[in-house]
Length: 309
Ligand code: NDP
Image 1 (cartoon, helix red, strand yellow):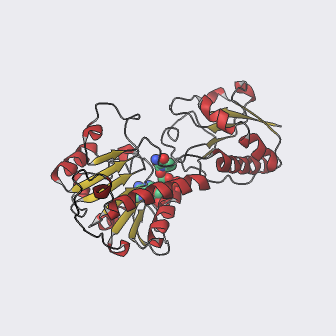
Image 2 (cartoon, rainbow, N blue to C red; image 1 turned 90 degrees about the horizontal axis):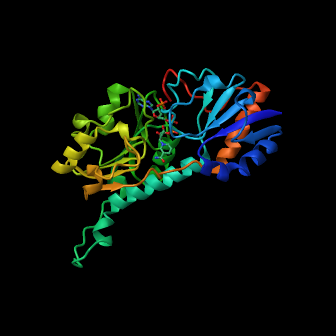
Image 3 (cartoon, rainbow, N blue to C red; image 1 turned 120 degrees about the vertical axis):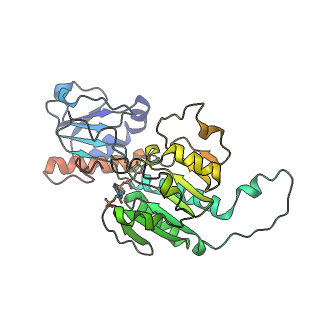
């Protein structure tokens, strides 16, 4: 019998309290799963708090931490954490992100806004180009960037992806490393940010790089707010270099009421809903990792603490 501490907001427990024990039983592991286990009896932590300050030294028996989120920037630098850390890679998470990215790319590609909000009833036909003539760049070719890039390529978009190490994804032009970032961005009409937030990726989208986009380009940021230099983006929106930004993630969340993004007609704010971990599919991932931990097998989706993701 292992003790699994569910450390996440109370409302998450309501979503997991049936699915997670059932998934763990399904892989043949006997576990007590609860948000309320004495510190000295905790073997594993399923981790999903929004704050950063957990002291893991309080759990002397702790063997691994299994994250509920794909992004780990709030925990990866925690020096009290000395056991393996796995992050969430969940088919439901990828499905949701594909839907959000594809939906917002199509909105801008097709120029839907002009027809949805047309108070003067203008009849002004301006057919959009075909997807094959629309250049989309995705920064980050991991689980989510690859799924989104593949979906967009299937729709016919001309997709370039960029990662830290070289990748090969069918139907995508794949570039990698700092030396190819500018090439990846040059002339992009729709730019999607799906990088993790690390010291290397902070402010990836700065003024010089915004200037390399196709004039009037669209920026989608479902990655993390701090990937973007906000001042530079607001200036690029003001000048018209960026035509619209659809932002799902921000340096401060919730986005403060007086933030200029709320006031800007060229900015669409979505409240960090691009994709969520789904309890049914995520429970299966956590259960499989507990099984592996008990069998002494390598955990899935381990975070490389030195890389930061
Ligand atoms: P992965 O770790 O699978 O992929 C990350 C990608 O970014 C990889 O291709 C990686 O390169 C690349 N990368 C990392 N650092 C660099 C760098 N310095 N230079 C170039 N490329 C780099 O992450 P996921 O795809 O699962 O998730 C991506 C991010 O999406 C998460 O970290 C999170 O911030 C965000 N997210 C947002 C959600 C939302 O609702 N808004 C929901 C879920 C996630 P390489 O392939 O070489 O390793």
